[in-house]
Length: 272
Image (cartoon, rainbow, N blue to C red):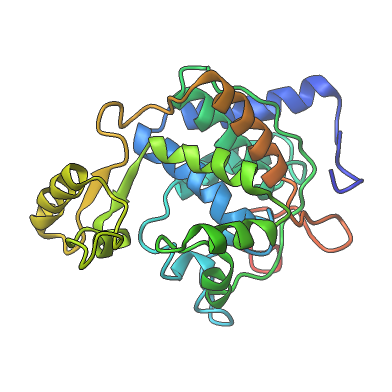
């Protein structure tokens, strides 16, 4: 991938580096694992899979991607990436990019949340980007209220087709959703065609969203009531999901010519 780091070391060493990421992901709870899949998606859809979503604010750039409305405060998993990067940098400095760690973490989270049923090889070779702008997230990430036409358009802009979109959307079988992202669909429609949501489901969601927990102003609900902590879908989807994740992992990747391998994932090397 990218033409220069497809195999930066011998295959066995690449596998051992990937295993470091797997260990850190395995120690996270189900919510963080689900967050790592989302982190990968949010990274790749804005400036490509370049770890720009990991960059912290600086005096020169006080509003990076991670502080944008779609990402803050809901995006999770940063500490897992930091821990894996720290260990890898100590063992083999300048070898494994933060962008690759994000991709590996999403792969491992998918496998662990599905009890191994979702299994796919994630290519390496991404370099890290040096630009992260909050203003670029909303134009590139699909909003929760988007209709099918807009969703297809958003995915197509990243080289992903409708089948990829459907497969990747299956990741919503795990994790939680903020009530604010769908509350507009819960009110009874003014006409018969005003909503396609099942009335019983809408009533249950209204009840769950009516009483915010822990004084929160935005409750969350499980995206799958039966198995909220499992990535469980039919076998055919599991295979297609892996293909779509790998395809998404190739979106606008950087090379040595326009990227770097950060020493610390939260800062570009000039600031690390």
